[in-house]
Length: 535
Image (cartoon, rainbow, N blue to C red):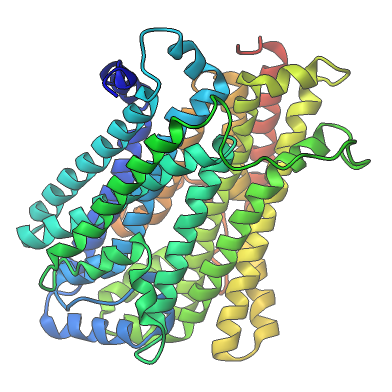
């Protein structure tokens, strides 16, 4: 066993160097979300009576229980843990999944694992190094989050318990992701298995929390996301709950090492499904191939949009009573939604969020070009009678179609959820479908920035695309609350989209955004046509 782990330290240091941009970005995302939530609650709910009113409103709304979980008290810390605990854990888990799969199965597919294995490196060292990096990232997140919450003024014990609840959920999925990397036949399959289990964990927790006393509340205990709230960090912490994710982490890593020794390099333990003997007549041309590669992932995104935005829409009728406990909170949402009517402001903010998340899918779909270029896909396709622009344009069109589809799903789901609770399902669905599609030009601009970066900055295109999305998300969501100058908020294309429902529509602004997206995409295609392919 000692020889099979030879070189683990060197590989771990190399992996940390490769992730020197990605890891701080993920950790910062969680830190800023939790810290900003705690700070806002401490400012908006200064009195016990105001916090009790918010807790009573949240505890009586099944849609909010579905989204955020059950409350563990009425203190600022307990409200923060309720509002962002499950979601912070979800982001920590996604960070962990990408780390483990990237440094195991993704390296195998790229040929790096075989190259490293030819040196004095043990067979299990890459898996051990990936686990070390994932554990290090979650421990760093735990320590920094504890410090941030204490600085804001929350109790030290509760802050540590809250941070451990989030970090330990990431550790649990370190073991789960390591097992998925041994079972699946490739990196995409491994990520799909792990993220699928994450989605199941969220769903079971949500059902258990929102079902009421007579429902299956035990479902909250089924998988790690539920354990995050069951620790009750600011309501008399139950420290023994931490044994569950830590035990799952240890068990998962033990199973992953055992499975790793039984499979061939580049192969998964789950049997692969053979394809057709001949391709479908529809699979002709780069556009059809791009769609074939993207539709499984797009289906998963659409399922997530459908469930989340249906529940968020169903929460809208009760949002007035929730905000009524704090006039300051009502003002914050009015600024974010761009109007004074609280339900319309909430729905407009919800459609803004849909636009930002759909833009994230667009960036991911566009940057698949980079993965295809550095892998074998681009070489095989471009060796035939297919031009570079035609090949890249197929992926860009599929990305644009995917963004539009996700926004349509968000609008329809939110409209159905809101209409079923408030009445008038048909009119509300049409109204929110239009509100969601109004975000399409801005979301396409973000995807086009990634396309321009792919062509103009091939070595830094991935980082540039995700950085642009992160910047726009921060400005769009935090700019109104922080009262940033108008010019700073205008740096986001979403500043020019109408705040619907209830806001005014500017056709000129939407046309200008579409023209900007087309120009950026054209610049990226022109640059890609004139540069060398990356090896």
